[in-house]
Image (cartoon, rainbow, N blue to C red; front, side, top):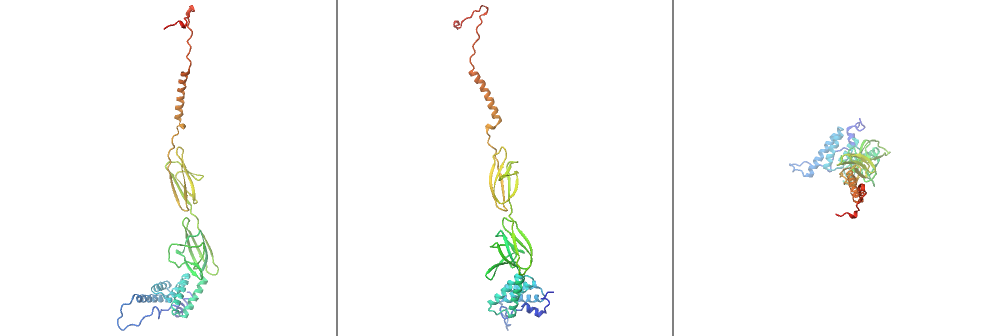
Amino acid sequence: MSLVEQLPLPLFLLALGVAMPSGHAFAQDKAPAQEAPAPSEEEARKIEARARFGEGFEQVKKFQWADALSAFEKSHALVPYANTSLNIGVCERALGRYVRARRSLRRALAEHAESGGTVLSASSLADANSYLAEIDSVIVRAKITIRPTDAAITVDGRPIEAIAEGDKQVFAAGIAPTGPGKTVPSTTFELVLDPGNHVFVLSRTGFSDAVVNRTLTGGAESPDLVFELEKLPARIKVSSTVEGAIVKLGAMDVGPVPVDVFRPAGVYPVKVQREGFVPYETSVSVKAGEEAKLNAVLSKESLNVAEQWWFWSSIVGALGTAAVITYFAVRPEPEPPPYDGGTTGWVVPSSAIRF
């Protein structure tokens, strides 16, 4: 049993500052002698707020803090009232939600001041300030550093929220509704949160998410928490219209298509080649976490007749024929053998021959 639960009920309720509102926003008129007209919209809200406050009061007597908190919050949403904010803070404090309790108690003091100081009693004011001092001694004030900057952060599934403390801005965890993370404008900042176990989730485009589970203890010593996100690699996929084509990425041969490689973000020259085809060359720029796809269309090389076997065979054949023709064209006319006159030795001179 807690210290609060050990108190006698009347003293306990007094210590909590739980009191039914009267004389202010929730004041009731005396019952009229005749049937009253339908209440106005404003009066209907006050009646409903008074009823929800009464429910919260009854739940507090049963130590049902969560149910009491829900009833008080509904009442305050209908009619903002310093006494209701005070009791919301008391319930949140009992549930260990110190950062939220501090916000509610401060709001109670502000609403009391706005009303001209006529709502909270002197003892309620003293209790509110005592609770605030107690909460300030137990909450955690952590120095958070995020690298790189502009990462979105959630704590226990809720974004953190900027609050003012004097002349400086800090951030608080646990008071915003559940939802996606929000970015913080600075790399290092102060975060106020409840003592206990917390799950920090950080995310940023091009980086892998960081999920960190930490148990923090409140007090004078402020913990320093550094969260660093790792860059995601870039992915490059290369295919080709020609099977077996070889891919070079920069100066590195990464093998035949298809290839699927991971590299740091940057700009990479890409060359896809295969014998008999015109090489495909380009460059690709990829950011961290991005994926680039290339399909290299290779076309066959144009035929170079000087490099084909049949060209040289025809040249050799043609040269052989030309040599024979040339030989017969330039060969000298052979002289006939001398006429043999037979056994008489008689020779007819050429000058004597007539046709």
